Each structure stands twice: as structure tokens, then as C-alpha cells.
Image 1: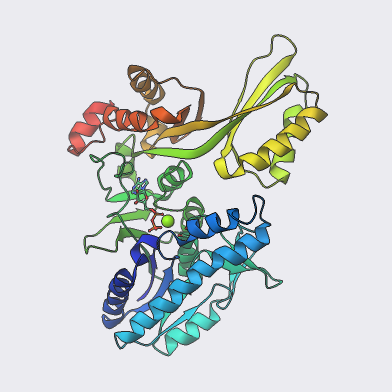
Image 2: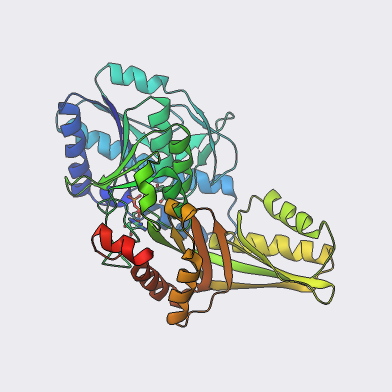
Length: 414
Ligand code: ADP
Ligand code: ASP
Ligand code: MG
């Protein structure tokens, strides 16, 4: 069997943990499987590198950020390959560029265009464990790129697809995907299985355990993902295609996104085409907008609010202020002390009353809802950041997700 195993930063945070990872890889190899390992930078290295750049400039050129951030993973692949070799197993490390992970040129959030994989296949044929740097690729012009924060998950899934691996195992510091972040709610339960769509929503809405874009690729190619702990042998969570019984659970999980900000363009003239103009400018600056709210106009103008990722706030404000002047809006305000809580589940498609139940749970905690957005399988509310943890705990409990039997859960949500 060909297995892709990805180890996140905390799994390789220090030399002992690197040796621990090497032992796990060796075990899989000794069982006779071919193994490709994708590894992230050691511990908080990527954060530290970003911090370092801030000491030099507040507005780093994104190409140079990629040059800087990609160094993190290069350290881990070399160390891990050495540690595996030390156990008597032939191994070789590669950067993303060396194995032909070709991306577009959107630095710091590049998209993978194709993976040649030939070099990896050659080394696998020679019986080697191949260790590939996660999070990075190369443009057709040989520029180094990175795939967005948490991007090693995407490297692993994309490699698993390109190499036609049977399974992609994501090793991390928790035992799988939980009903909510187990660090926030100790009562959170490990899920045995979760559908691609649910994981995609949970990840996009803040569940860091899997990178959202990696889920799009996994779904497109139906590659099964096994999320599990690098510190225990327990089976984790299988992310797979939806099966009928998954719909029995209405709310699969609660997600929290804290790295968000709300931007409001005030008194925008209420004319056709202005929202199109504003959001075209913002998307041209490569900024992802999330929840959008426009108030009903009584005076011929309207306030337009939307949320963006906190790291994009400065860039967004620059664009928003410029376009606000052009469309003769009054000005731009922002709030960076917001958070978004969401409930997610494919069972919502066939159940009503979930939104009401969510709002009641928040009201009971006296939490004010600033914005609401919904899709077929999720409901999100923007609230004050200082109420975020309380909101997650309340929702987790209200939807019966605390450690209880499945029957009780069903009874509670109906
Ligand atoms: P890695 O370094 O292995 O990539 P991450 O830090 O990116 O690990 O992701 C794992 C973390 O995700 C966990 O430590 C946990 O705090 C957080 N997390 C958030 N939501 C969830 C969830 N629903 N299930 C499991 N973990 C979650
Ligand atoms: N090291 C990168 C990050 O911290 C990629 C990853 O860990 O997946 O975002
Ligand atoms: Mg991660």
C-alpha cells in the first residue's frame, strides 16, 4: 500500500518528537508499505519567522515572505530524513520545488496547479521513504511559494492524490476531529467520522485541525483522510464521502474563528452597481471576504459591513478607503474585536429550527449577535471576541454535543 503521512508542527516540535515521528514512519515502512512523509516546520517556527520579518518591516513583500517561511519546512525534512536513516531505513528529503509541486504565483496563498511526482516515484521504487516539505511549492518561473497557513495539510492531500495513495494520514496533537476545539471545551467528543463538506465548513469557520482548501481537494478526488494523534496509537477520525446515516446528527460540530475583523463602509449611496464595484476592488487585491451585511436604506444611503481575516485588515482598509472616496461614501470604520461562532452539520438540510435554537442559546448568555450568515449546512454568528469562548461552550451544550450517548443527542436536537 502507498500511504502519505503528514506530521504537523507540534509533532516535530523538538528532537525527541522528531525521533518519535521517525519511529512511527519506520513502523509503517517495516509493515511493507511505501511511505511518503509530509512534514511541517518545527513547533512555532512559522510564527517566529513572521515575527522576525515584522522586526524589519511592517509591509513585507509577499515574495520575500515566501522565501522566509519556506525555510521552516526545509529544516524539518532534513532532520526527519536523518532520524529515519538513523533507524536503518533508507530515506531522502526534498523541498516542494524539488518534487515538482507547481503552483500559481499568488505568494503566501498559492494554489497547486500540478505535481509531477516522478522524482518521488523513482525514490519509492528504490525502497526509500520520501520526506517532502509541506506548505511550499514553486511557480513555473521557479519562484518559491507557500500555500497559506496550515498548508502542509494541502501538500499531503495533493500528494496523496497525485501519487494515487490509498490513504492520507494527518498526524497532529489531538486524537482526531472533535465536536469542537477540545482545548476550549474539555467535554468535546472525538468524532469517528465526518463528511468532506462538514470538515470543509468546520475548517473554513475556524477549526484549525484541517486546512480548509485541503478538504476541497480531498472531496474532489474522494481521497479518504485519517486524522489521528502522533502521540498515541488510537484510531482517529475518518473524513470521507457522505453516507446516509451521517444525516442523523443535525449538528456535527461548533467552530470558532477569532482571527477576523469587521469593516463597515458608511453611507454608501444606494445605487445599482456600487456593491459590485466595492467587492471587485477587494477581490482584485486578493482579499477573501466572508459575511456581508447591508442595511436597508431609508435615506438614500446604506451601511455595508463585511468580515475579512485579521491578517488582511490593513490591506482591506487601504482598498476600502480608496473605493469609499470614489463612490462618495462617508467613510470606513472597523472592529477587530469580533469572533465568529458557527454550528455545522449536514443533518441541517433536513431539519428546521436550528437557527432559532442557536439564537436562543446565545440570548440566554446575553450575547449580542452582530451579523448572521447561513448556508445549507451551517449557521454563523459574528459576536464580540470577549464572549467567544462562552458562546462556544453554550452552543456545544445546547446542541447536545457534550459527552453523551448518541440517542440523547438526537433527543436534544429535536
Ligand atoms: P498541526 O500542527 O498538527 O497542523 P494544528 O495546530 O494546525 O496542528 O491543528 C490542531 C489543533 O486544532 C488542535 O490542537 C486543536 O486545538 C485545534 N482544533 C480546533 N478545532 C478542532 C476540532 N474541531 N477538532 C480537533 N482539533 C481542533
Ligand atoms: N508551517 C506552516 C504553518 O504554520 C504550515 C503548516 O503547519 O501546515 O502554517
Ligand atoms: Mg495545521
